[in-house]
Image 1 (cartoon, rainbow, N blue to C red):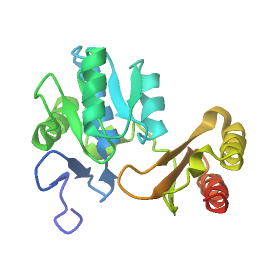
Image 2: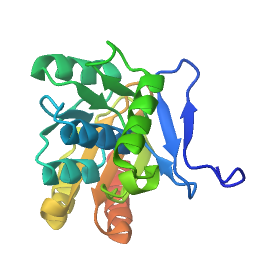
Image 3: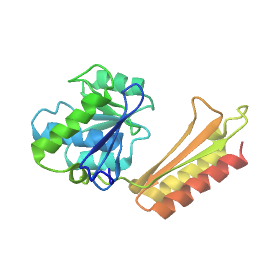
Image 4: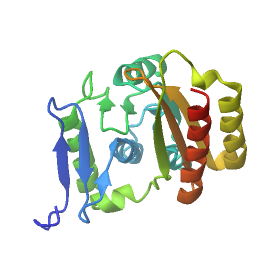
Length: 217
C-alpha cells in the first residue's frame, strides 16, 4: 500500500471467505471494522434491517460504535456457523468475526470476502470518504489475549481461585471493559482475553488472570 501510494488495499484468504483491508496509511482494517462500515452505510441508505451479529471475540469498540448509531448488536459463540445461526435466529443480515469472515445475508448465503470488499468500496464511493475516514468512526479498544497451556485432565476455568481472579478484574473494569475466559476447542489451552480502554491496565489484568490459571492447572 505505502510503496504504491494506493488508497485502499484488500487481502483475501485462500478460499475467499475472509477479507482484511488496509487504508492509505497502511493500517489494517479488520472484520469488526468492515462490518461496522457496512452497517453504517446500510443505515445511511435506509436499508438496514435489524442489527449486527458479532462473536465473543468482537472488539468492544464495535459494540460501542454501533450503539452510538442506534444499531442493535449481539454476540454469538466464536465460529462463522454460530454467527450464521444467530443471524437466522434474529432475522438480521450482517454478521462478522474480527478475523475477516463477513456474512451479508441480503447479498449471499455464506461468508464472501469479495462481496464484503465490494460493499466497503461502495461506501467509499457513496460517501466520498476514504477507507481511513470511514474506519475512524469506530475506535478499537486495546485487547490482550494470553494462552495458557494445561494438561487437559483439569478444568482451570472452574477453579474458585481463577473465578475469583476473573471477577476481581471485572470489578476493576466495571463497564469500561470485559473479560473472556474459555477453553480452546482445538488445543489444550485456556484463552484469557481482557479488553478495556487503558492498554497497560489491560495487559496487567490479563497476566493477573493468566497467573491464576497457571497456578491452578
